[in-house]
Image: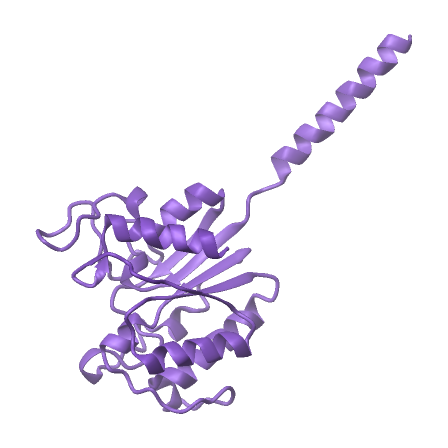
Length: 228
């Protein structure tokens, strides 16, 4: 009888542990990004423009497999699960794009509500705002007008304000590219401080045509892991 009782108890504990293991999921992560985070067939919605292809145009990049992307490397090393990758090549944080064009159809502040319900949010942007010479604007942390959102500083403020409000339980991390304008860097740092968003500053990333190479992708993943 004692042996049976012990066996029953062990079986019950084993069953409970097994059930716990099955119901305890790894953290989910969503990405809000630009070309650096795209790959053919791996962005949501699938109409978003991309930079990285399974068969890239000659001379564009040496990245030709989704497993070479920084985010896929990061997920593999951390055990995180991807919920949504809402990245759009060429997109700016604000609504002003290249040549002064209206990018309100693709800007970060337009796409920020399409991230699902992740445990972790990775924001990787501002590169195109810097490259496109988007207006910097003044710091404006609330009550931004439609006109304000065509400038970087007020648009960035809205972005971090809304994401922190809409995802109060999520860990929010901003990844800042290297080689950007000083005023862009300063604005990102100021906004992250104000909204208590974690900031990871990249350094010395290897690039082809301004975009991470295979080695650059590894560097990004490694630097994020080290910062975390």
